[in-house]
Length: 225
Image (cartoon, rainbow, N blue to C red; front, side, top):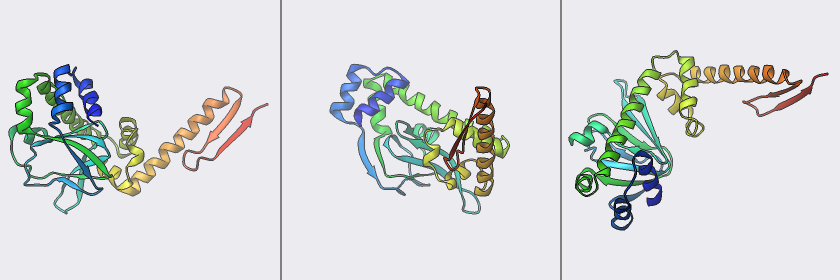
């Protein structure tokens, strides 16, 4: 899992041989196996850790005035978990929760350790800054997504999150898109319906019709004379 971490850091900015050896030999990141449903952050708790997801998935959310969960972001394999403002300012988290929604594995490091590493390996600060930027940009993208019509939100969601969408329940997807499960199911039917129509028209130009039902996986092949 340390190699997985190093490779992911390298995608953000090159990792020096010295820093790579330090991660492997000194093991500044602590390993945490977590059961599904485990909370790694609660309101009132300091958000002073940076986490790397080696396996599984997490959801970031807060409660509205009704006590309902408002889904804000997801974290999955080879992504990093951080509350940027609280992590850098050293302030306590006021409203957010982070929960494992699958059996998961983390590598975690405290801000205190990170501050020490910055002095030893300058690229570590670049990594942290780019992680912060990535998470902040995803938050902005989510807000922009919510300005779309509800039917367009689901289409954009599966385009932006193709790897994790099949792993998420309707509860989490509808929460992230700020819609109800009934509307979500209608959007799914409309989307797959348009895709089946597209397949039909596309294949007819080649003298053969292949109709695939994305909902039932049934297929029909018709040769045109």
